[in-house]
Image 1 (tube, rainbow, N blue to C red):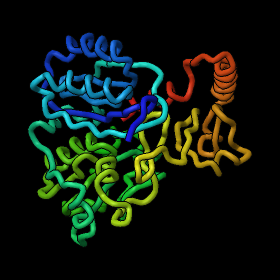
Image 2: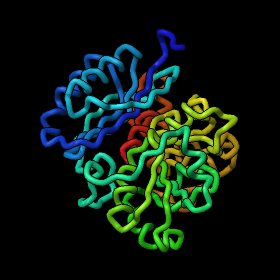
Image 3: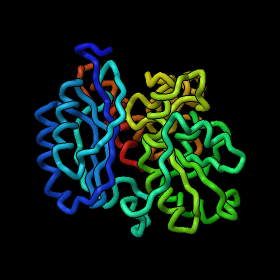
Length: 317
């Protein structure tokens, strides 16, 4: 049930050939502006990816506008809701890839793993002959993942192909089940494994977000919360805003308890990055936080505010 002030959040992607993606940018940006929609959409030759938020009616209008392009007609967004818009502005960006793996030969439109519906996921990942791999980055895995899933400990998706080469868990090319937040990274990771000789590769259709929506909590094999790329930082099993905040220096998710540690300075540092920040960066973060507080007192949004930083994180694959 929604109300007039509630914001509808749509996470969406579609791999499809868009040779005219540069020309599409202005029309999409203009439509978002008219509808007062905020967030980030990425356009590339290989398709569309992003997260956007606005009123329910306006989000539905934009989705219908995007689906009016036959190449995007089966776009299937994942929806959630928030009391306020988690973004400050709208960005429609042109990219080389809509999710950056850095392997140009990979094309999910040609080769992709077997989709597994959320209702069937528990049975698959409970099998003894299946290796379960979390394809997300280390800071995402840190706050929640599926039971017994392997964490590749990558800081960006670009590192994933190297992990595949080096992983002893993938020796002898076992059956592999992969998952990610909304499904997009698994499109490329399953394609990559298939191109490298794996025969049975599966991925969670709709990603973690669809699983949390479809699978009752009492039957769930998900543990913790799910990192999301906006200033909610994380969502719980009911897809409500979770308990985490974000360190604005290193972008690691933080619990309320971690923010009470003496090493935590809001907007400047946390215990994860305390020893990694140079004095110059620390001083810059201190000044940024000061300007943010001044802007807040004036009732204005500062360029370094929560939603801006979360938006930058959303561009990081």
